[in-house]
Amino acid sequence: MEQRFTGRTVVVTGASSGIGDGIARRFAAEGANLVLAARRGDRLASLAAEIGADRALPVVTDVTKQDDVQAMIEAGAARFGGIDVLVSNAGVGIAKELADTTIADWRLVMSTDLDSCFFGAQAALPYLKQSRGNIVQIASVSGLGGDRRLTAYNAAKGAVVNLTRGLAFDLGRFGIRVNAVAPSLTGPPELATKYAALVERFNQRRALAGFSTPADVAAAVSFLASDDARFITGAILPVDGGITAASGQPSLF
Image (cartoon, rainbow, N blue to C red):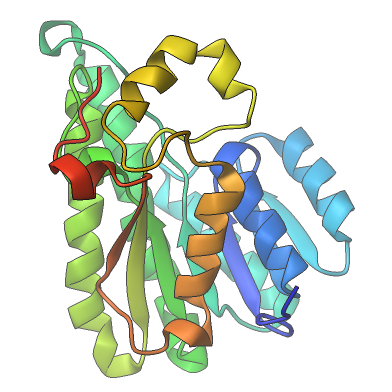
């Protein structure tokens, strides 16, 4: 695999599982140093050991807390001499009808999915100015159209989409690019068997059958973070098999 990130330092939040794990592995394969952030210290330690202690720093982080995010960024910059890429991936979704969605549900989703992106961008900004680096945020097709029973998630991911665009304008004068990837249903291959009915409902709306894997999302993220995308900023790249292109409405629940 091409070593596009050799000597560069990439921060990945929500790195302990799923899409975040896939993103971290992709950047590691392309030669990056990794700052791995999540709440699950055991999983972070395991992933860091696989990548190698010389190239991966696990930092247990609650991304809903600004102080935690600031400390994580500073620890990574101190360890590797700076920050080149911030991937704000940490997220959570709660599927409930509006009447059943509590204030606690709303706050959890907003703080995890949206506040964490703001905290990360602020904390990384001094280092990204130095490196003329970039930010990739993980949005969702739910932020481009909407999904039933995901009121808070739709709102949070929609805000991430527009935060991406706003940051692109604010930070472009420093040479910092800001983009987002918008996945839809994403998971390992066994998802097709475990949730066959749900996958079939997605397939009825997709241009391409199947669903994305964490590796598919990671490939899009690494492209946007690389010099191959040097003149791309403010972009929202769906990784959804054509749901948004085909209908403009990703809702399937």
